[in-house]
Each structure stands twice: as structure tokens, then as C-alpha cells.
Length: 142
Ligand SMILES: [Zn+2]
Ligand SMILES: [Zn+2]
Image (cartoon, rainbow, N blue to C red; front, side, top):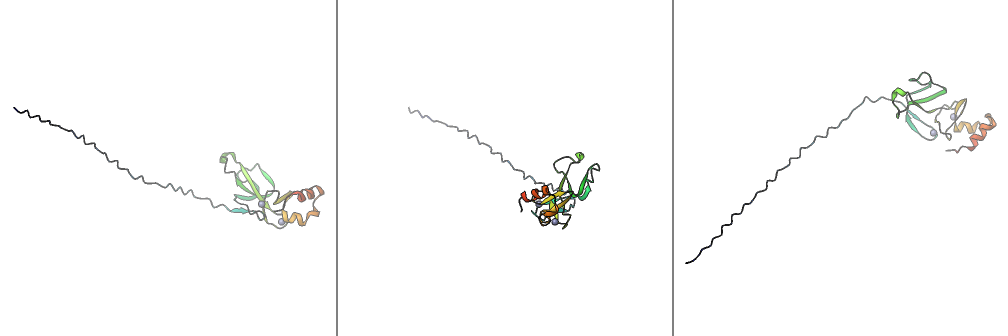
């Protein structure tokens, strides 16, 4: 008598299904909103070289008629406040002697009823009252 033991090992190979994830290529839609770029002129300070877009050169803010400046200045809309607020920035002016564009930094310009560039104020320093002369001497020259 022989006992034949047979072991049937039924292995269930659970075939794991690898679901292939198809990565859909997302079309990078480049939103190139070409907002009709307003061609704004550029103001450049002749002394320090500062450049900035401006909206007008006037003694009156075009979008806020209530405001008038004492001299013709380069005016730009304040880009950080909503248009409805009508905020504006004065970038600079032109020297009343040599007509060069100058920004409002004390090193670049002086306002004494008119705007003067730092070069002209130094050349014509004696034409200014003593207090202004003092101010001119104190400001650092670029
Ligand atoms: Zn300047
Ligand atoms: Zn000047």
C-alpha cells in the first residue's frame, strides 16, 4: 500500500492590473493678452538717467481738471491706484534755463517758482536768494 500524496498547489496569481495613466498633455495656452499697449512717451532725467513712461507734459492733470501745477511737469497716472481715483505722479519737469528734462530728486532739480536743473542752479547760484543758495550747496551733486 503506498500512499501517494499529491499536493496540488493552485496558486492564484493575482495579476495586478497596471492601469496606465495617460498623462494628457496640457496645452499651455499662452494667454498673451496683447492689451493694446498705449504708446506712452518716455521721460528721462538728464542728470540721473531715470526713465519713466509719462502721459503728458502739462501744468494741468488731464484726467483731473481740478489739479494744476505751478509749472509744466511730466505727469503719469499712478499705476498703483485705480483709475477712478485719478491719482497721478509728477515725474519731473524741464529746466527753465536749459530746457533739459529733470526728475524731482533734490540732486537733480530745484523748484523756485520754476524748475531748474542742478547744473543751471550751480552756474546761476548767485541769482537765487541766500536761503536757496544754501540749499543748493547742501544737495549732493550727482
Ligand atoms: Zn534725476
Ligand atoms: Zn538747466
